[in-house]
Image (cartoon, rainbow, N blue to C red; front, side, top):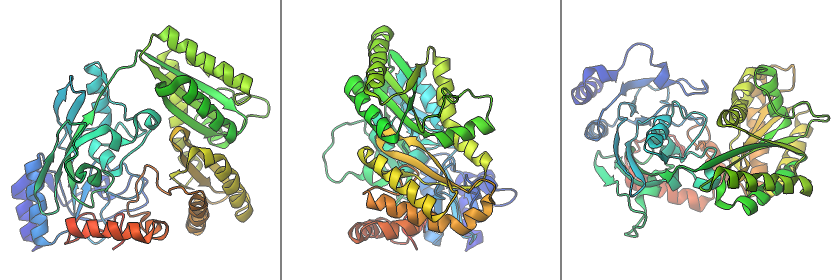
Length: 474
């Protein structure tokens, strides 16, 4: 049966695009190098018709499939297990921009398109595709849709879900659903698009999407502010909404220890106010994009910071004087995960809580972890504008990071996720559930929600062949 399936797959996509030998680490290992699986084959179709034919062949053979984009996910949602029975369905060859409709402000693209290339394509048209995240140079739009990725501009433009108007999907039976309309209003039954977005390849294979575009802003301003507390950061967020309205496009918070790791491991980066006496506990990076002139936008932006300084929620601030300076500030923020990796293995969390409750959550959970695991170091940063924190936990200084991860990860996760539940939040804000957190979903999601999710899975994928073990445990 296996030989017959591989022969069939070779006939569909060509022998060169059915990979079974050699080093397949790029497809079989997750981005964080936590899990290494073994695929029956890596299949690389070049069209929706080929995807449909591959899925039909696998379904007929009863072979499980793992859809994969850039394989940059953080929850082990696109990695095969170790059984050697799963077919990795890589969409990277499907990387064409099918159409740009300037009047409708939409772009129809294939799932394997690299996010950064879509940003650049829109820019060449004088338009903006606003989805932006650290892995944009290698992640694909299909993976972004599969996990409903967030990023740095959610506060204005929303998650990937809000940027998508339509999808093309291959079902688990190998049929093609063409929902690539560019309509902003279509109330004709269940919203199938939203069903597949965020489903992490468990309900079907996203092969193309129609995405929203926006006019390029006339002015883009970036500031770095030192704040005396997390409560002050939330206060600044409220003032930014009040003064900037829809112009607020980014609002990031960074803890002092998180930035100290950047200073330690990337000394070439100049972190503003790092040398302040009694360095502030938190820093904020905020961005304003506006359609009005640079001069008027800057006046409003600086007026906000002056008001915040008088209010006491900002201790000091600097406004980027050029686009290159703005990029430098963003580069510091985006370097935190890399600096943390240099410091050693750590326990990562991607949580969301209502912004108004974040100060109380941080105070509660910081104290809890310090009490339960003395000396533990907290790398707290993230997208405060939309209530998403990367509340990561580093081993005590001088400790064995690998041993800390091995012995403390389950305990730390329970402490953090129980605290998240206490504050009515979510343990997965933008990274997805994947396989890594499937057991957490079973524990923290309501029985009613889980029952409905299993019913949807059973209805669409009765053979259970689409990314088994992802989101819902086997």
